[in-house]
Image (cartoon, rainbow, N blue to C red; front, side, top):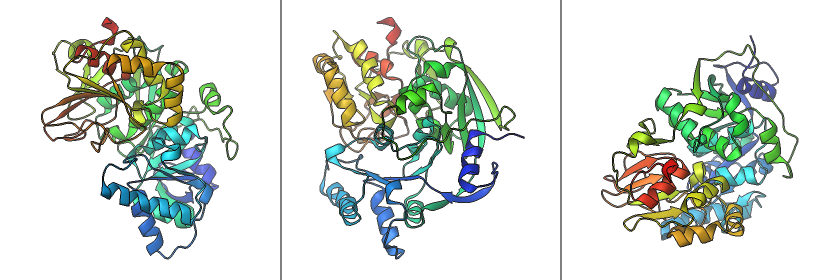
Length: 421
């Protein structure tokens, strides 16, 4: 019986054939914390008596949730990470000077390498599996253990194969495909599984779309999302200064999967996930008929804040205006993405359309700042979660969609089909 890509990564790290269901202790290549989770990890690390990081080159802190600080508590919380970074002279500490949302910034910096095992104290750490790695979220004390030892314990997940067929239809992106996947499986249908994306459609999906696919694997309950290394991965990594050569793994033809689902991307239409679960799928032709008034539209987050998303939005917004009763917030995921958007003239389009552009931050996505919803407000968002109170007031509603649908809805002032513009 052959091995899946996930089993092969663990076999490589453990030095022996490893299969789903086994519990192993292996080296972790990259450990990631942020301004919310790092202080908890730091306290646990220091209380353990540890005096040195086992793998300083494999540890990163990204200040991305409440930076610049929006209140005194956030400022004091951030200082814990800053003091720790200075004390240990961390090589990969990203603050306001080089800011970005962790799951966009670290791949951009070349710190995510195919074949790696990566953990982070953030549930959307599964994003990095798009580069052919195993990447998953863990608790802050789990991170502290890895900070001190360089290793951690894992139960190797079984895999679900998601086979993508055909060239994606017009305005179909990675976001739509993962929303369709979640609708098929349900929000707990892939619990502790690895979602492995394969098939013809991948050749048409760039890294921005692939990151979106793996990013929301957790919204189906999955432990990780993964896509095997190919020419698209190679092109993304070209020119980046990597710490070591990638290790390239692919699933064997006779590998064992718990389940296989097939999605015909060429027959899809854009999807909107209605409150209050990402599995609540409505195709846009149905959703646009309902006249759902939109108070706020948001494009950003670790799911859809990349340059491709900004280009998609700009194409729709150019020469148009955001509806009088609506507002549009655009948050580039990193400073480099912001610079690229400026150089391409996208910021001119956004401002002329009436959008607000913020610094890179997770703030709006988690209802922290830079876009909090008030009572009974509705937001259509390119982010990843639409739970009760996710972006603000408990009476607010969040609708999830791709960047094209979000931009079109901002113009119309209600959920709208970008194909009609």
